[in-house]
Image (tube, rainbow, N blue to C red; front, side):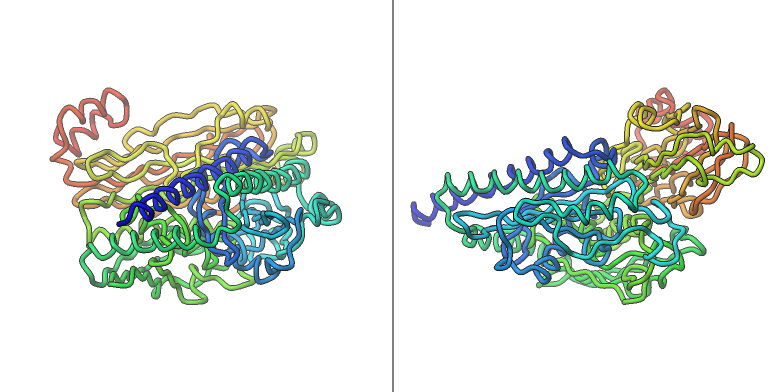
Length: 558
């Protein structure tokens, strides 16, 4: 290697790192300016920079795999509709089309071109989950996408710096929280604008006229690094299946993974067909979470971009629940889609067992709660809903993750989405709700040499005693997370009323006046034989309240 080439490699690495800093600042601007708690508090978003071919060069660490990896595909759809040559400075484009964006109408994707000396040199894209898009709300009850709220094709949000006021007026008229939703659209535009400014500053510092050479270097280096890791695995075909609750009937997720010289192919042939309800998954979201499952074990140190994503190819038969065509309802696509990393990890466990955790809760336990006139069915409540203030909120929470190689699972942690639990204090401030109870759930983590992470228990009521509704989007109630390597399954989830009635894991249901909603979230599966668990770890679990003395004696012989 010559001195010149070595210096050039260092220079390119510095520029690559600067790109990562630019997109991380882009994401932080989105968080600081967002109106919805799902973005501001939970971090349900993505941000990234793309070349003029629509290839993702860098993504912010802040964000969810479902947004980031699906957004990586969606920018190409924007370029199909608005070629780079047709763009002008100050233009901003938007969509929330599930099949062109990140899988459901609650996610808006915004794309903004960056200009240097009058020429477009890159594209910045960002996504965020908004609190409401009208229709049935954040619910799995719809039968077609047309019931799920306003749906925008890829279109202009701003032209030459002037916002599309007609579009904003239509959005405001169709949602329950117009101020929040409009504010989030502005926050998406401003975070992209920040990315554009920082990129142009960087290009000036490094005297770059285009990103073409840097883009090729990033993509090829990442692709080769990913292939090197894949080629270190034992080649072959590995299969795994998982049964989950579904809505009207259980769903089977079936995967076949082929590891070979050119990469990894994941095929979901054999998976259940589409549901009649809104838990169907567009292919981009399937590809996003299945590829993330691979990256959790293979190539985790390789930055996520078009190059490192390319060697992982994901397919699902059209008409299956993982490749749902229009006009299937898809609002709750996360309920199924976020299970896919565990399905894929079940395949990888056969190729690299020392690196794979047990199954966890996986899909978020999002408490989508609504109140006000007409929201809840309360035949005996005397019409309290008429006087109660209207509200809509999505509380992001989750159960435990599976036991990990060398470590216990994480307690009450959202994996694979990576979003944060939304704080009780915030939820109580912006709604007429009281969270009376929130604590870890004893005996929920599956027994194992490495215990599954604990779930949590929450008890929620209306501060004024009025009825309210929950749009249940929960799974792992009938089919709990499984252990691996001799570990036990985690505890099943449970949804009920304080008065004792059991509720269904899916669909809108009423919490009657004066009653309380109780969420008991699943625990993660255990990893390894329970009798191999260290005695001091068992004693600490009992002291800390994660395991009862009775369960310790039963599961660990202590």
